[in-house]
Image (cartoon, rainbow, N blue to C red; front, side, top):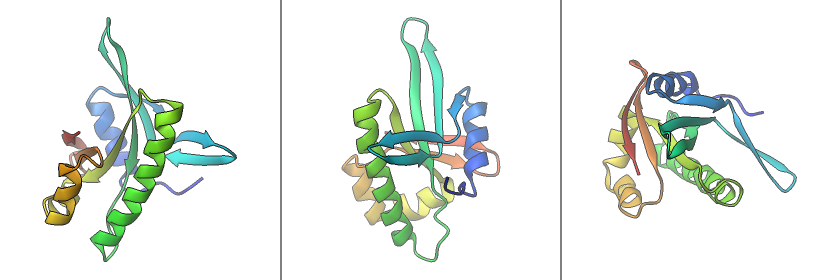
Length: 138
C-alpha cells in the first residue's frame, strides 16, 4: 500500500467537518490483477429521496521543486482512477484534493486554467491549517 500524502489527514478532517462520512481509507479498486489505491472514499446523504452522494478523493501535496511535474503526475493518476471508476462505480465522483496555495499557484495560471476550462478534472480545494474545504470545482 502506498504511503499517505502529507495532507491526507487534513482533507479527511475537512470532509468530516463538512458532514461527509469517510467510507474508505484508502479506497481500493481492482482492475484486472492490479489494485489501485485512491486516498479516500466518502458519502453524504443529500436528501432521503435522493440517497447518498459518493465521492473518491485523491490528495496531492504539490511540494516538489516543479509544480508542472507534480501536475503531470497528478493528472496521470487522476485519469487512470477516473477511467476505472467509470467502469466499476460510475455514480462515484472523483476529486483531486489540493491546498488553496496550490490552487492559486497552479490553477490560476494559464497551464492550470486550460485544464479547468476544458473540464479535465474536478478539484477539492482545502485549507490545510483550518482543515476546511474552500471550494468544490466541477
